[in-house]
Image (cartoon, rainbow, N blue to C red; front, top):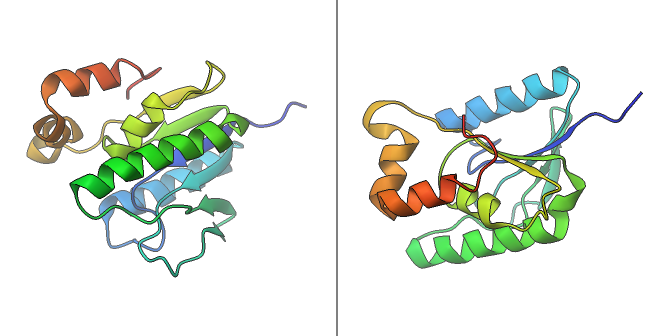
Length: 155
């Protein structure tokens, strides 16, 4: 029997941020993928420097090596640090899955997987709060399209 597909979910909000809709969605999604027989780990930032950088939540290993960004310059540094983390540690996974557009998806798409890792971006939201509306306003339409063209699938 072969080893299960290893997925690294890169999420801006995960447990314990369950008052945020995307965090609840991502916890449920990680649980569902694990129950389907896939190996799932989550990468998410810490919102306090005092938080542990690793933990297990519902049998899912959670990596929190970076403090969450606060402000535009911090967001750029955060994306660069995430990309470096993926370059150094991400080769152990079959899929990098990012459920939303933002600094995380940009870092995932720019990280060097040498073609070994599939990069999956999941578009979220509807109406004016849809990912493409929010991030095209922040980045510009052309930059957003160029970034998304680096992904394997965009769902």
